[in-house]
Length: 418
Image (cartoon, rainbow, N blue to C red; front, side, top):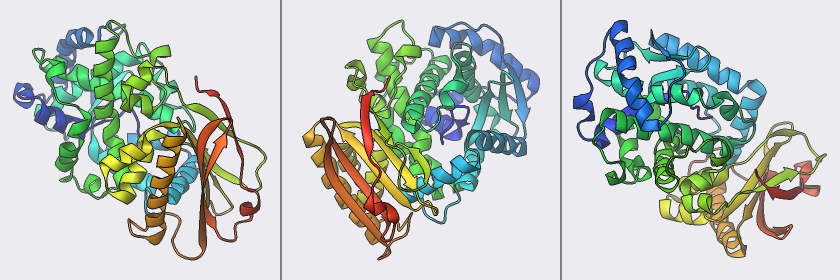
């Protein structure tokens, strides 16, 4: 549910705070003519920063905040039509990553409308700048969105963001797009800045999050929404910085595009060619499948952070991930079956113990009381398994009277994802 066509205000705040002199360097841009001039002036610097050439010049236009909201709504509804949205919302409620009371569509639209500092639209080849943006931030936003305009000329961006029910792979792809734009943005605005001298980008998320607390919608959003919004920018920037050092002269596109957040979080896994196993549910199932997808290592971390409140423990419990897949079942979309695969038995056992603790808190309501309800009407079951020689853990959480308890959906392990 994170979209690469949005450049959030969080990034603007981060660049201004984390790169000394950036805000002072940015000249105020107010008129349409000044916007067009800024685009023309920045294009050569963007080409140098990315080592790519523009094949055509993008245009730049102003949009009111109401028009920005209309665009967000259009893109969101196009990307997540009602059946998909209902399934995803049910899934994140069952995992407890969002409260039962949260309307995902409304929350995402409100959050993104608040956070948008500018966006590039591939269909019109245009950069759009909100009319209410601080004039001193316009060049910061243009420098970032110009990178997306350039990426669009070498990549089919729509094919990346339209990966259906491949949540983790999609987040990895978005992290490349936003990470590259974040790094290039610094080089454009501060050409003397040595990228390698900057701190670990992902470690800046706490400071960035605290900056954003002043924004009403962001500050009240669940952990999953806040962290998912920030991760592609900071986690992606850290990976792209590593990639440019290890693979000089190459672009992280095509066959070199990472396929999992595990690879983004652990570049050494990427270099080693560590790819998640492919999981597929056996069919037919004993109940109606309302939705299906996977979390990936990053969202599994967020699940642990949500319930254990310990970043280090969350990272440890999610390490060794080798793929996962879940189904939301039942007429009421109230049954969850989730399989996770692990690199070895030790990683599987570590995850099992961690999720046992986390799910106990989830069901006791000690964390948020979010998603799927608590109390005596539900039943949870955790099992360690070995599937095709791979360590696995299965979690089932459903109403106690769910008919699927008699025949829990089975899954098969295929060849590693390509």
